[in-house]
Image (cartoon, rainbow, N blue to C red; front, side, top):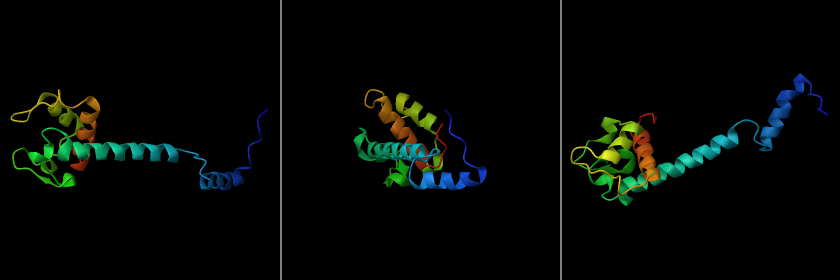
Length: 125
């Protein structure tokens, strides 16, 4: 049997009470989980960029968010590559930049692509 709907005038108060109790009406809990996942991915991407990838991206590239000032490759803050471009270059290489296909798995490449594109101020498709 269905419960009667609270009076329309009481709905905002009921909603506020539920939100205040942390019962997660809406997407607040989902958004927080997604933000934590993105933060972890960004940290992973930064770690790969600055040292865990071999060779590390920071050796050649300048990216303010990574604190790097490489002088060989393009300045990523100026180039502003989107995530799809970063993925392609990681997979295939470009110019003197080697391919990372045999060195990084798909999750690492994705973390790097997201870190670079978001740090450079580009939407990440």
